[in-house]
Image 1 (cartoon, rainbow, N blue to C red):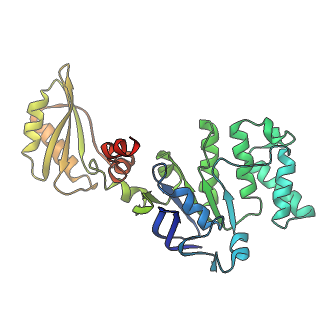
Image 2: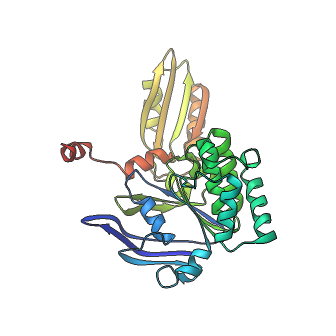
Image 3: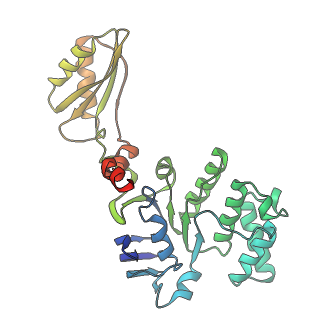
Length: 323
């Protein structure tokens, strides 16, 4: 449904997006991650045809966004950054306006408004003006306009920004359900949303894609992936580390925490694996040693660690630039 090839965008001397390529199929939810200024919003604006690329192509539903913008844009629902809306309109009036510019009139328009109001829980504010809404309800209203024409493709820039925890859960559930039939791209700074919603994620940094894979594949790049954490009571941490270091398949053992007669250590495997082999070997060693095991589990890896390692910034260079 979405095909992006060698996309580039320059603003003067600054290259904001530098050779980005990816595809999104129907039934796929693609998370778009990256630090501030990485090029996420610029890429999404080019995908939607809001701004033209300096180089490269965007194809939506088989239509080139530059050569055939109208049929391409008909397939897209877009929630821009900061959820812009006409503040002097009521919620109902704004949604009616959005439906009409999407070509919906009469009963079709009314049915579309009723559908998105119900989906986005806007009944209680339907006749309020947009400028009186809380940030959360304003965001919901703009989200509603993006899906009012039931598009095949959704491009959502920070769709849960400003929402409270309950509202975030509602929006994530909605995206997950819609993602079963639509092609969806959404950017986020909240890594837990990747696991909650995404079938795949891309990490972009300095205008380039630096990682692309399922959440499980990205977590496997974590230093912790495949490591086994062990908590033992009434034991010496150094002694536990020494014993585990002698096991086959163990690359290193770190003491995570010690004190009050307990030990928490983490054993890293020679080869990353989540099949439980190292955990079983450590469990057998614990039985032989007579350790009182409080907890033993295999780490899946952490997205925040992968994100930081891939998008790390040299702070000393940053300070030099700022000075």
